[in-house]
Image (cartoon, rainbow, N blue to C red; front, side):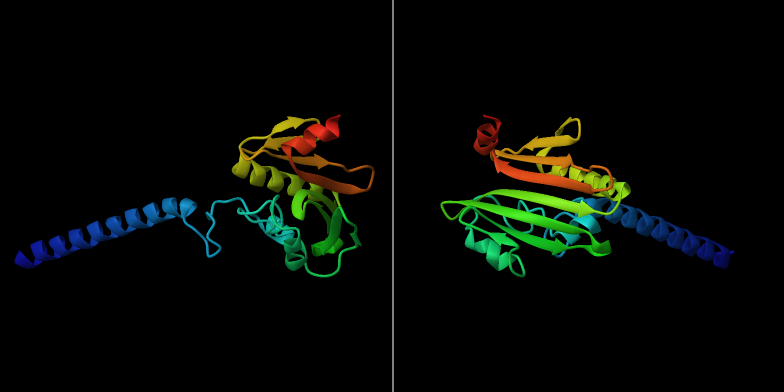
Length: 191
């Protein structure tokens, strides 16, 4: 009888321990949505493989560059020679998978990055949809829900930046245009 009670007691302890371990594992899984990655950004931060390929992070406007950064930082950050350069801007091409490309124009004023314009060229309409979905989630996470008008979604960031994402596909030419501008630049463009 003592052996039976002892076996029953040990079985209950093992069962309780297993339940406790399962609960701890579930709590850790819930906490992983707010855990940080090696890069120091939240793991639930919506940076997909596609966005990683574009070089996006949660701590810069585009590819490690933000409006207001020293214009000289662009040449240090971007690899290779620009495809165009003048006193107002420099443009760089980034090669992606599947022969898709990104052209990034960094504009400058007073030796500071004043605007960023991005042309994303992809091969298919589904690729446009996938990139657009990822970009919308990324910018919604950073700036709140954007306002959509036809093919353009616009965000107004708390720091005065205006970000737009527009599907510019025509016929069999598929693409997305992204603009990151200071709000006063947007007002000037509309005049």
